[in-house]
Amino acid sequence: MKLLTSNLRHFYDTFLPDAHHSFVVVSDLINETVLNKCKHGVRIINVARGGIVDEAALLDALKDGRCGGAALDVFCEEPPKSAITLELIKHPAVIVTPHLGASTNEAQQRVAVEIAEQFVALATNCSAAERARYVVTGVVNAPVLAAAMIQTNAPWISLANELGKVAAKIIQGAIPGTNICIKTSGSGMEKRNFLGTAVLVGMLTGHTKNGLNLINAPALAKDAGIEVSQSHEGHSDVPTVTVKVSQGKSISHSLQGTVRADDLPYLLTIDDASFGPTGVLLSNNIHLFQCQDRTTNLSAIITQLASKGANISSVATATGKNVWVAVRTAEFTHKISVPEIISF
Image (cartoon, rainbow, N blue to C red):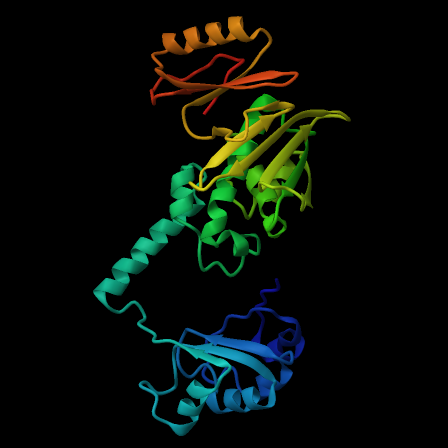
């Protein structure tokens, strides 16, 4: 995206033909001369002040195709009365809406609530439920968020984020030099290429002092020495996200998860060990560990959890060459610091 500012004397001739966005406030800024210099089919949006756009010039450009469409919520005269403005409003390529300017108490309160919800959605420490509820909307300068704005994608972002956290803890935070391969499977998943970035957000959580989000995660991952690749495989009965983490030439660990009808993230496999078709819910108070001796290790781990005051609510076992166990506890305040346990 090109966002350009310049001395207005040279702005039009030098920059406007290549600019994607420009921000200036001048009466009749978008006029006949400017429209002639814009790319053919340009779309005009004016949600600032009436008079910035020369309405007669815009109407002519719409009629001859120089302008591909317009969205307006302000006009030179309000309410609109002139024949030109009324014809502009009725044009099939024009979208018009009322402009409140947040001038009512109700509008100001709603704007305040929406701003707060946007910050919650972008916060790095909000829960999966909060991310699903508070979806980022209206962002125009962050391409990775374009798809993430869609509410149905929010649960998948939460899943990718949680898989990234698990991957980081499995490799014990040895981030530099890590290779991450993210693969999506299933119909429609090829459109969710933003999930790789969401995995990075989860993986880097707690490993960077910088603010972490979907916009800056790729740059921070590069700075941390992480190499990332992403692919899609269309044939799958269940849509899934697979994260493979390697250090060196051999793959160290592989995680696979999905989102179910309840819009919550589930872990299906770790390495070759499967938790079965239902999987394990990835949420707070889930503790994962690898067993060498299933009975002995499980008993020892549960004893350690109980000694911290944890109440065990469920236990799930993933079987394969390696055996992984997921223990869910009721919420408690003690921090688990047993090295072999991955706690959330």
